[in-house]
Image (cartoon, rainbow, N blue to C red; front, top):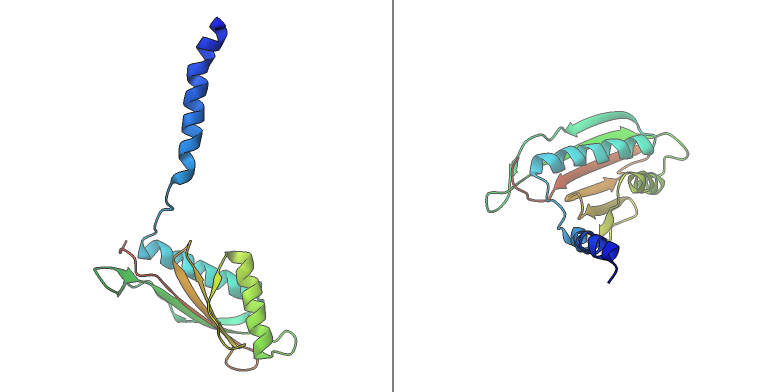
Length: 150
């Protein structure tokens, strides 16, 4: 065996072993407080992306809501207006879904009506309901999973 290869082989083997170890980590589970901040950011950015106006926070969140086994969840909700286009509730929900898709990856949680869509993010541990109860009206409410307080 070439002496140079002996000198390089041990560090190279170590590098390959270390490179193979990094991909198996479980994603960090956020605290309820961390997930609550993310929830608020996702809802706010969704309204911005959907060109909402007159945003009014109806549930400021920021409080631990008891769940089970010593865990808690956080909530956040807001309403807004949108007078772009027809203001048709179906179209507004589609606009909110499109805006949320640009913010983060959410999956359809349950088949809803055209004016109500329920989505969830396993990555961020958040659940959001997008709705339009009337012409030009947008409502987004959400909550985190039951998580450790923080």
